[in-house]
Image (cartoon, rainbow, N blue to C red; front, side, top):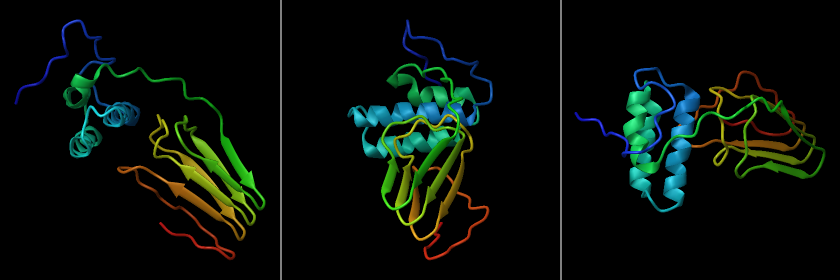
Length: 163
């Protein structure tokens, strides 16, 4: 198996290839792939194939050839944004589109709806804590392919909880 070399004059990788990749490294590579698909540089089948390879990668050397033809990976950005609180009594609150995910999110609703959509979000963390409560409303969390959701405890009044 041969490894692709970056084009001449390209910026060097942000970390040594033999080093273990972090979840943030994999997420940055996945974001680069999604941007390339959005620009029409990758088809959906190729995007799926490359995303599988990126999320399975253990080292930078395994990630580099998957994204080498798309440009350099951006270095990690500052991520200490503090907790996000989404709260409503009877209306609807949505967090969606392109946004930077903090480590902790609190979602509360009495009889309204709170939606947290991570599909276009930039999430540099390996784990995000979402504390959700709903009296008779709904809290909906939408995650992209490859993410895992774990419910550690749950209570229901007049609603539903599904995983």
